[in-house]
Image (cartoon, rainbow, N blue to C red):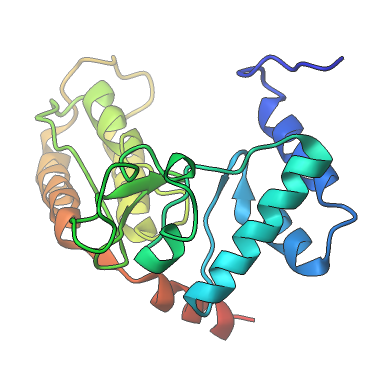
Length: 213
């Protein structure tokens, strides 16, 4: 079998296996990058300086192409120096036509998070909809917040706890929930709206990881 249908239940595992198989004989730096920083077919990594990032990307691209016929592209970085080291067609689709040193760099989305290249911060693009205070409305609101790295876990967990407390067993999907929980719901919804003012530096996140080891 030479082709695997994308979208099958096993597709993420197959993609991960293929990437790791392709670098199994590569140098340790490349193996570490692929095995630790890829999620399915996307990678997100931080390097000490621009040249280190360029060298790692170029070596990894060569190995993946030669060993697995895999093209590593759609490159984005907070460093114009890094992006200018690659051909335009290998950059992210909204970066190909820009003057990387003059134009405003657009926000990138990867692994479920938004990355402001100019400020080098993770940001949260949350759309607030006026959902009714029902089981369907609260569940829809809670599940609309995608936070794979757990940056805003205190907020998402609070929403889940509120849902568990406010929705009695057997309640209908569209019946109003008990009014004594509605003030908590409004307060939580406001806290979600305030996420649009939150920015998290990847350097801060990396330091937390280092300190936890």
